[in-house]
Amino acid sequence: MPLDHYVTLGRSGLRVSPFALGAMTFGDDPGSAGCDVEESEKILAAYLDRGGNFVDTANFYSNGHSEKILGDYFAARPGLRSHTVVASKFFGNMHPGDPNGGGAGRGAIIAQLHESLRRLQTDYLDLYWLHNWDRNTPVDETMRTLDDLVRAGKIRYIGFSNTPAWVIAQAQTMALLRGWTPLIALQVEYSLLARTVEGEIAPLALDQGLALTPWSPLKNGFLSGKYRRGAEVTDSARTSYVGGPSEEDYRVIDTLAEVADSVGAPSAAVALAWLRARPGTVVPIVGARRVGHLESNLAGLDVTLAPEQIKILDEVSAPTLGYPAAVNGETRAMLQFAGTTVDGEPSIVYPPLLQSSVRY
Image: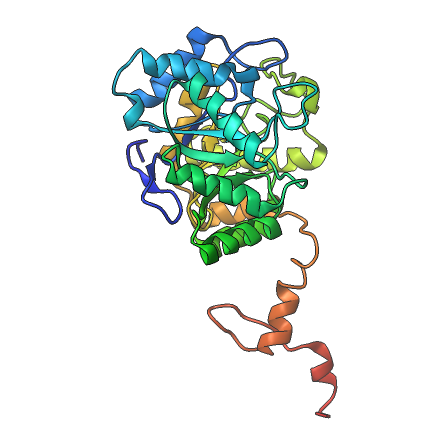
């Protein structure tokens, strides 16, 4: 599948590439783990030249330099910005000592958007994300402010990132009932090594028609193929502060490598293909510090996994989900369906019913 075989992002009219380009690595400022301006522009050009149209950044990335790199690139190429879906995020406080410099309050959102638009040298954002849940601000204040900005033409669509399912549900219901702009997508951590999103957020997204845009789809590079037992990895900017894979991680990594060998594709490509095969609309965000990294990731568009291969990866990476996910699974079917099959889902009879014929 080429990058110009677009998908609709959630319940909206916004068409985006099947992979988004993450710009968190743009900018090699002190404290960041990114690449310089020249390499950033090469990565962006490679993505756009292949038909990609969805670029994701945030005000906080490289202390604003990521947005500035994007803004300079588009400013030097008149007309390109209007054909590119540019997404950024608010929440990160870039003003030490100012408690109102970040978060999701009305004044903070407006001020952060103003600064992002200035750095990006544009008068609107196609998609504006809440970067993290602001538990100190009522969600109705956040949603009303975002709706005002949509009506003012400053932003066109909105989404949430790193937010509990109950907060997302509250915000979405409020928007729909009050005639405000609803969410169209959720940006979440999701990969073969990070599947707890399947407990509540992914089912909520599927039910509400929200797209998922996974960040860190290769889990800090652990699923890239360069991590093997006993091998030293030196080409990783994140391992130094997140640590290496655990023994449990290596079981997934080893199985992924076996599946990748069987289909003749890199591990990274198979890991991304597995994500694309999840229910609903899933648009992984691929990042890169070198053009070669991007090319390796984009190979995931050319991989289609067979059902048995997906099953192998599903089983080895099965997450331990918190309550009530467990009792909403097999236990629910056993109690509800009493040994019948409903909508293709089989069940067994609740054991005590097999031991007694008494019905009260």
